[in-house]
Image (cartoon, rainbow over all chains, first blue to last red; front, side, top):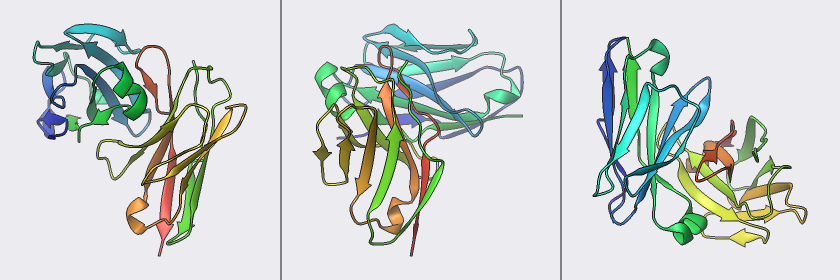
Length: 116
Length: 109
């Protein structure tokens, strides 16, 4: 089956702009999580969506937001971009509780955002 | 929150077993330990997981101590393609994974 698809793969934005990243989970998966990866902070949890509802949120400012659609596709948005937002943004999907316990999450290849 | 501690880097000779340790002394009784690896900034790849019994799959073996405060991931015959950053993860509140800093494994020819 197709994996987790993230678009775009690379993105360059200017400080102060906003950006929207997209994630299409594995077919049938209803849980989508977002992570930010930077050299200094490593992989950090942003938020998780399940059936169009945000279930968990990490310790990030309100400039970071997301949503999930009825087909489980998810988007995350970062407003008023800062240089420190340059990172690899990873999306991961999982199906029901049982699968999550057994296999954890399947990650996409990420979107590399560069803020200049 | 249950968190993990791993050595920052390790080397392993090609063809030998790679043993990657992880401490998770604050893990709760119902929390699973997951191992993922990440190759050259690709998305992390699932390897194996366990609760309290030792586990084995086609990729690796996971040995969890009886008190569950530590575990070891074993790659039985390391190849050059196993060079990656390996993360030992415990799921904290909700579905949030705490990745920690991981171990950078270098397999040497």
